[in-house]
Figure (cartoon, one colour):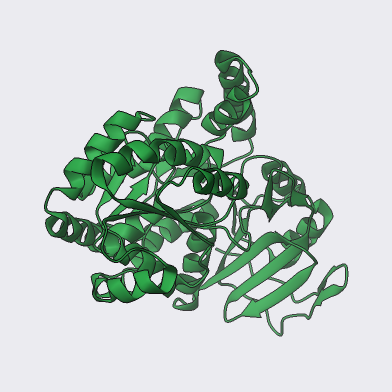
Length: 411
């Protein structure tokens, strides 16, 4: 039986939550993560879609604790969002640290969640554990990021021995794993990496795509979309949508593009923001590469138009843990070219909606792109759309996920 919640108020600095009028026995999930910024992508989309699912299901409540510039509380039809004041992360300024242990403790005591899902694995698990001290609420870890491979990619640039970095990352993963009652991963590659690190009992979950917003009818507006954004209308176009960061292999993609352009005559469109964007854009413009740089697109419909106006979407990151952007491209009928590792490659292989190339091999990338552009793009696009609709419906994904929450709460 799920315990009813009290009606006391909670004070977060200047933000005071008014008491609820009656006890609430709905299944309540508290999501805690720092990966929720103004220009963030996959995690933000996942949490927004979860909130939309909760609004359609009156037996559920969704509470989010995310960082912000100031303390703030927002109520919206079964969904409550707490923004907890935190400093920006220096290396990733679109994100903020979530370190407000006492405020999170007040939220946990007030909301009495049935399950707490932790969506980031550095600092936040320990903050959540302290906030949950003395309570039996199960903590669930959703591995939206790959700590081991992220650390290796970052520290490799500073000359750190790869085996030492891997050993340290795996040790940390095993230690933090002791905080959780369940572990979730959205791809086989992420689950395999966790298993190799010594983290067991990982539940593989399938996430979704908004197939109504991301749809093939938007391809009818291709020319208008290209004209609106300064994209050539008479050339093949390859698009990337996501963060401009090292772990996404964007520096490699920008430097490998001249070989691909020489082979195919295509233009590359890069959509998004991130710590490397300014320097990479300056470099590419100085060398006259055929690259169009566009800002982060917050409007989901306009983002779908951009994905639909391209001939191919590229996902170069070898440590993608789900590959939402690739799936959104597939839903728009745009074939995907992915590196041969990570969740992007899994989606391509499962759907038959594109091709893969050997990781960080510029010649292999150019060859794969040439073959893809010379093939039947409409057939590949149809395969991608069919796969997205049949296997990645958000309602179906959340039906399974909330069933898991119910089982954890019942323990």
